[in-house]
Image (cartoon, rainbow, N blue to C red; front, side):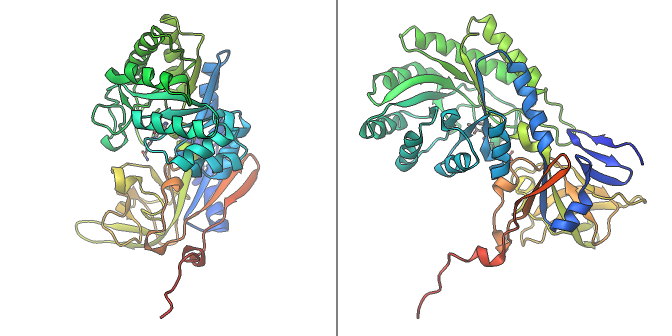
Length: 427
Ligand code: LLP
């Protein structure tokens, strides 16, 4: 038997001869057993990614709040809850999911630029750690909801530090002109307002500058701006107990070289210490960097179409299963589950959805035949969580590999389920 060879960015994904494996399980066999499209995750890969954060944070008061929008499947949440993580949520739906998976409400931060009153009430009822508030209007309505319930809402204000994270414009959030956060220059006034509202208890400060960030520089700049504010706010006798740096650390999809979480966190801590803020509790809200490279999407080749000027490899997964290429022109690795010999041809890998934007990869060199299975790499984050039923396509099944065990963590949706809540009109 040959020795497994690792793939870039995915320590638990490797080649054993011609076979692609995840934690030692052949992916082709998993696709055969569970059908395609199929998401397969490695639990060890998730724990490994988390450990990079926690190693750097050892000995500090800290909380890693997994940004569950990246992948909110219950068994994924359970994995992080069992590891002691909190959650960064953006809706009551995410709140209920986190609780159902064993999450501790006291470790949940509620982010998001628009929260409905009923969402605020439910979060107050279960006692979340903090609301990350993004506007003066939200401060006001949260205070009113809390007063009506006779409680105080713990709040942090999300500051827009006006930093360019140098990422895709759709996932850049910390620049002036983005809808997110409270402008840096208005922050002290906003804290004064928050401190004066009867239903609120100011506990922290936060920011989130964007996603798929591959450099430390933007974090360092945002942190400096945040610490300037902490000092200005405390000069007004308003206490800041925790600093939340947000998420955003990138992963390797193809040739990106983001820093290790341990390196990023180490540098953040050094800066915080240098400015004398080392005693404060620190929060991080990573999503993609915890799950992105822990998962793959398996798909079967339906047919190949050879022509001019392009060849198409038509597969059974589509933009409804994996929206990132269509939405962000994202490049994600695509490899066969079993490598064939031969040079192959250049293909656009596309799905069956009736849109020209329905592609998973462009100009990929592949040696494939109908019936072969392919793995789209780095599909653990923002893949299943963004899946839809467009073209009446049931959502994929999900499998979690955990050492020797293979767990089906989500059954494939059925077509009947897709229209079970719809009604015909009596006529
Ligand atoms: N905290 C807040 C307030 C956020 O808005 C986000 C992501 C995160 C944390 C986690 O960021 P991460 O560590 O995952 O970068 N669908 C896009 C990414 C959207 C990110 C939205 N916010 C994609 O597929 O690239």
